Image 1 (cartoon, rainbow, N blue to C red):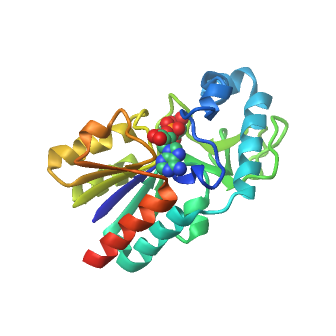
Image 2 (tube, rainbow, N blue to C red):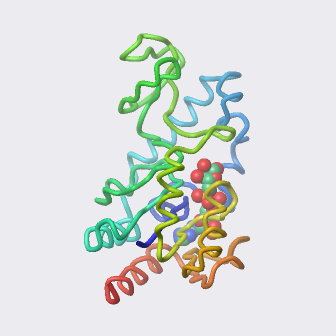
Length: 229
Ligand code: APR
């Protein structure tokens, strides 16, 4: 089974910002203010405004050739591909991928932090919104913030334990636990490949790094996988 980990670089060419590149989101916003439970408790209106803007960008964006190539790989190989994404955009799904584990949640969904109900996020969310199920004014974006636990970790660890190949696409390898997956793959002795615009701080942990934009290097890699499948 091919374990594919994707990060913000996969959606960069769809026009969605990355976090740590030149001009990335964390160079324009203090992540403590907009991506932590403490930041949300301090100023929920500011956090909702941040995610309302990201949701509008996401709605206006289209999946790119890399998302489509990964959907094609899954269409051909089925459960022999497992995509784990750190991204909260819905571009994998809109490209046709069905088997995606979203470990950092979903930007286009809302969550009630009183009763844990989830529903499609409205265009704009505000602190005054009430939960459609329990009525509490306790709605938040359904995304995992720093200091919170990523979702589906058991499923992810089970997939990593079954993987015969590990590929990381468009991620800087800065944030755990995702940043630790390649070391686990190395420990298991399976081939590891990094597809990224440039070498990263984790490149030394990979057998191979292919440098280039995702819309070029991902379709080329998928063709290679399909030719040898
Ligand atoms: N093609 C391929 N890779 C690209 C492209 C591109 N067109 N553009 C940028 N990249 C690469 C950058 O070189 C970088 O290594 O994408 C990576 C983006 O890194 P980050 O901005 O750190 O994004 P990511 O690794 O996904 O961040 C992980 O951090 O803030 C949290 O929860 C957030 O999920 C995110 C996590």
